[in-house]
Length: 339
Ligand code: ADP
Ligand code: MG
Image (cartoon, rainbow, N blue to C red; front, top):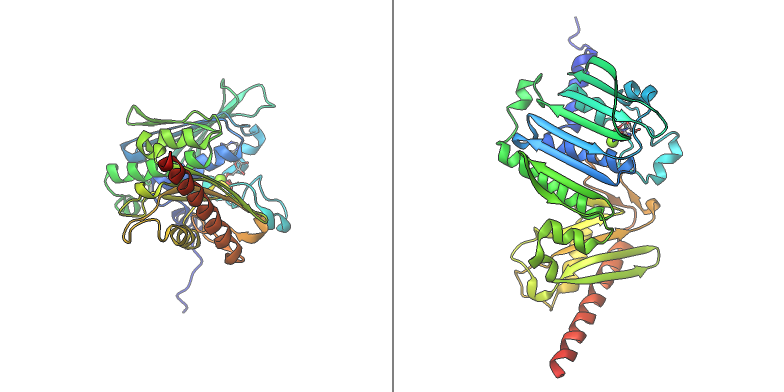
């Protein structure tokens, strides 16, 4: 007698959900990315107890059509990809159609939404993947998700959550990076009843940096604006005299998405060689804009990684962008000494 059986749908769903939803921060990341894809101008995020018991993400984006609501929660249901060739030029943050299916399988979820083209909104509730209610709701255009009791139905998973403080910090980190990559969106972030971040959505990166990292950091920066072929690098690097003992403040974004990339880190530090002491590190908030064709974002569900089809031009663009800004800064400093 054989020992292999196909998992039942419910168990398979929980396993799949676990890959997308690791902790409160991953829920917040997915929901906020959906709000951005929906064209939101204002996004409010609220969490309690590190997000473990309560998370709310409210946006003023396009909203979801009533007829689409139940479909949106199915695995591989997305409005962002239709045919295979769309995968070659993804411009939205989401595209896998997995987030809502995963989140609703492992929490108590409420969705309140109204599409711009509809008169009346809808409230939809799902607990652990089971529909609880579907009702009319009076609400403005946009979408609000409320997620309660993450992993209430998978205690083994809940046990792996860290202390509320750590989970809350991970959420804050996501909000900071997301706000930085979207200066045109006004973010409000409320933690345990207290507003801890507000960005203004005026489209200026420096004012978002000011809100997120504070005045001292913002004042120690040099602007970067550079184009090499099809690659554009813009944002800010730290003045050499504001370098730090670690790399914690190196922030890279590719086409508006926060990523970790060794290529960019090495290019940045190479360009700073000779300007700062060994053992000190530059900081930056740099956005690299490049044609979708030269990156592959289809790497990992959390999508923190991207793969460059060809690394060299990306390295060169960042290196020269940083180097030329440093040289400009240096010559300005020398000129002001001479005066
Ligand atoms: P994906 O983002 O990969 O498409 P999701 O599971 O995150 O998959 O979302 C499924 C679909 O639900 C999206 O494609 C989108 O059409 C819709 N949706 C989700 N969140 C929002 C939102 N905040 N505003 C408007 N539509 C949304
Ligand atoms: Mg999504």
